[in-house]
Image 1 (cartoon, one colour):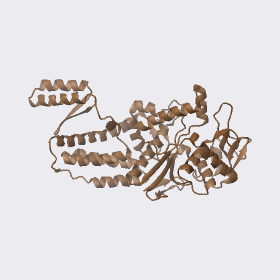
Image 2: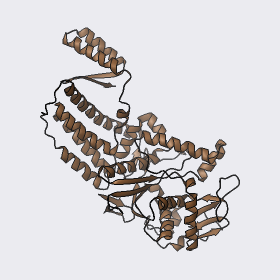
Image 3: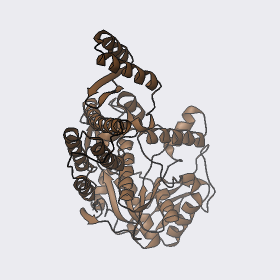
Amino acid sequence: MKLHNTMTMKKEELIPIEPGRVRIYACGPTVYNLIHIGNARPIIVFDALRRYLEYRGYEVKFVQNFTDIDDKIINRAAEEGVSSAEIAEKYITEYFTDARALGVRDANVHPRATETVDDIIALITTLIDGGKAYVSDGDVYFRVDSFPEYGKLSHQPRDALLAGARVDVSEIKENPMDFALWKASKPGEPFWESPWGRGRPGWHIECSAMNNKIFGPTLDIHCGGQDIMFPHHENEIAQSESASGQPFAHCWLHNGMITVDGKKMSKSLGNFFTVRDAAEAYGYENIRMFMLMSHYRSPINYSGEILMQAKAALERIKTARERLLFISESGAEAGADDGSGSADIDFARYRERFAEALDDDFNTADAISVIFELVREVNTAVSAPQDARAALDALDELVNVLGLIYGDKADSTDADAEKIDALISERAEARATKNWARADEIRDILNELGVVVEDTPQGARWKRG
């Protein structure tokens, strides 16, 4: 498998540090609000990457942090008259509600900044002792001039980074580019005791400390959105490699940005959408489909029209799957399990092409195209139960790798299922005896229940309209 490494700006073969095992760290949210659709893209994309690596036989250790102490959390707590810990806990719970509804599996480890303070203090101490950081008025800053390679991930000269960044210029810093590792506490703020006085960690240091604690000095893949490549990831590299003297990550993956109707998402423009907002309008499954229909490095535009296209695309796969399930189950009920079938579909080749797409810089767009080609062929070629079972297995295998269909399976039971099945059986009997009036009456009843009936050579099948 080859992945586009932001550090080298080229596709490189994935060669894990330990054969057969892949260590992945994904930057998680600052938990002061519901996650928005921009947050959803890396969460979904790198969950799918993890699934695919496991599908290919790797043992994956996937870590995603929570930043649970930060200015935004402190400010939100003050607004609501509660503690920062209460705000963080509330929105971590809300995160899991949305992430799981998006089909995102929990990470193997979800470290929190507040649970890593001792490790953060130890790492900062190492940097100070090595002359890479300094104490100033209770704060601790990383000395950017001590790391000559600063900017190597962003591929920008330091002057350009300084010009394009929001830099906190302060008289207590040696250089405007120096960034905080530890912040002295202000009145009323949460704090921890440290060798430099009471305070709390800066944002960037937490990820370095978490990675070192869980993985050691080097991990296989570090991923996140392009928006945090600088300064966050750049700063992680500087402080981590200054402390260890070893490469921080072998591969850096960054997903493209999301615009809303062609414009940058912004609360001031009124085009800011949480995942919860989008899910109420279009459904969680369709958001996941939308995110994976484009290559992860490409920018994508969020709009109602595009979400409806994603929904329609996913419905095509669901409809094909329902048809195959119906044919296979109908055959089983009729005892038609003699192993015969007329379809000649090369399922192995579909699997190969699917893997080829994902092995080429995790091209989910091309992989989904392979799924649709399979759907088209099975829709036209499959009519026998044995063929339907084989096709269903192949389709489910590919769909499950990307986690595209999960809601229907989770909610497959229908409270009215027995009633609907009885009505359909009665309708079939009425049609067989040419009692067309009763058959039409039953169809009207089913329509009122929101049920669509399709008559097929294998019998009638139904679904919610």
